[in-house]
Amino acid sequence: MNTPHEKYDAVIFDLDGVITDTARYHYLAWMRLASTQGVHFDEEFNEQLKGIDRMGSLERILMAATRQYSLAEKLALAEEKNAQYVALIANMTPDDLLPGAVRALDSCRAAGMKVGLASVSKNAFTVLDKLGIADKFDYVVDAAKLARGKPDPEIFLNAASVLDVAPSRCLGVEDAVAGVASIKAAGMTAVGIGDPAVLAQADFVIPALTRFDLNDY
Ligand code: B16
Ligand code: MG
Image 1 (cartoon, rainbow, N blue to C red):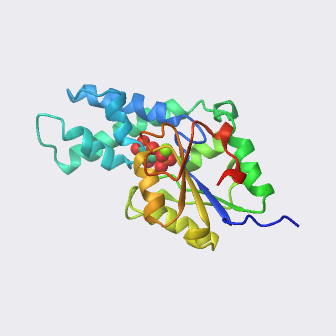
Image 2: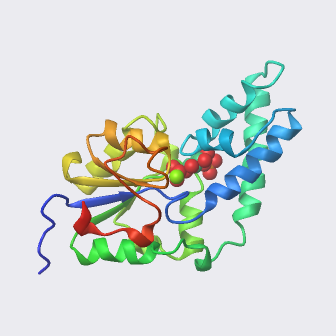
């Protein structure tokens, strides 16, 4: 029998930017779309889009455009960006797992904790399959069924509810400002991956999953 963790019964991970660097592919696909619409797009702009769902991200980019877009045009542009993104992730393999990701996931299982995945990406199941880690999760949120994206707490609350763990006994792991806000709004403890100055709302911040240690939280 595992000794239960003193504070947590579940760990809920974000995908893009935490387990694999698909954040880079989202960036490249948005960059291409923004340039076709005459919108300046750079790393700083991209930072604001991390964890924001597809239509929400598109809205933010088009706000910087010089004209108005109809709903049909927006849907076509979102589809165009997604086609580009799907092409970019087509050749992903387990080599695209970020360092420390498998060890972190396995350490949660070994500690007897439930493991969830909370990504607002509608491509999350495809990415998990390509990475070969789908079986490491007890539950993966289906982003297509969400009414609201991050920073709304819905996605993390859905994961906690299906895993049957109180939010206060959940640890959320995120690389995005909107994602950390979602975890905190859900009443969970947040481990940020990245820069402490950017992820100021997180309870703990580590540079990468290589430094993930359940004993620290
Ligand atoms: P898709 P996460 C998010 O995933 C990404 O951070 C964000 O950049 C992206 O726009 C969003 O997924 C939607 O992705 O277009 O594939 O549905 O960080 O919540 O894992
Ligand atoms: Mg992310």
